[in-house]
Amino acid sequence: MFTLRIEHEIHDYETWRAAFDRDPAGRRGAGVRHYRVSRPVDDANYVMVDLDFDSSRAAEDFAAVMRKVWGSAQAAPALRGDAHARIVETVEATDL
Image: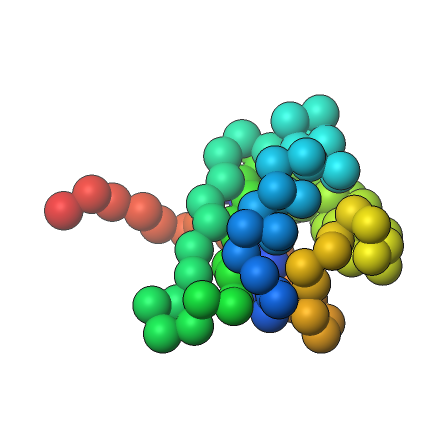
C-alpha cells in the first residue's frame, strides 16, 4: 500500500473540512482506498491527511491534482502557507 501524506496549516477547521468534503480532486475516482484526517492535539489549525492507494503511480498522479487544488483559493479556502506532500510505502503493519 502507498500513502500520500499531506500536511498543512489552515485558517479554520470547519472551512477546511467543508472544502475537503466537496472533494474537488475526486478521491474515489482517483483510486483512494481509505483516508485518515488527523490534527495535532496542541494545534487546531494544522491538518494531516493520509490517502491510501494501491500503487505509487496513483498516489503521484493524485499529488499532482492536489497541487492544482492548493493553487485555487476557491477550492482550498482555508489553506495557510504551503502544503507538504510525501508518498510513503507501508512495509509492515500489525495489530497488537
